[in-house]
Image 1 (tube, rainbow, N blue to C red):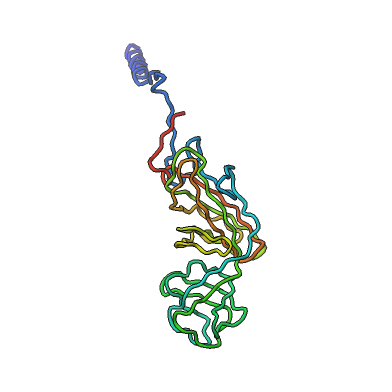
Image 2: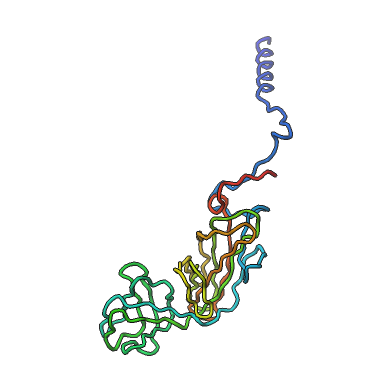
Length: 261
């Protein structure tokens, strides 16, 4: 009986020794931060939103309005295009072309009504058109794509911390098997024609019925006032896209942020 009592007392002493002591108020502060780079975060310190203008501040998904016509993109051929070909080699870059554009060249060889049916963005770069050429086309000839649909929108930093980037995703809806491509311009857009004064970067192309993953846009946004103007290109009119913006603590802030609450 004595042995049992000693064992019981030892167990109680051990439990008391291991029990946590009460924390002081300073020690009991709860620290909260995002631990995963893919985590979507919005706090009183950092957040960004999509909207029609640089003044948009509504922190909710943004439905793009009706697309308007006006996209024009011209690139030179990278070699001689033979008569009877549907593949046209493109020099430098195919960025700016989208599937569904009407193609013209200002010279004999491109049939009326020719449209882009596919695009190869890596070397050897080319576009494939719906109607075969009827004559050879010289090297360095400008191939113009037009008749697409476009819409512009802003991504705005609405909080007091500067961002080095932001995440963007879109959900596309339409009645057909069409796409919307999101792009950024390294210079300034001429929105009436779709021309960019610098390089155009394609962020993501999304097919109807699909919600894209979150893609990182490496564009800095100043605290509270930073904004970026992006373009959405559609293959047809009547197509719509819902844009969502994400600010991720492990990706889009200048340094990891710890906030007390």
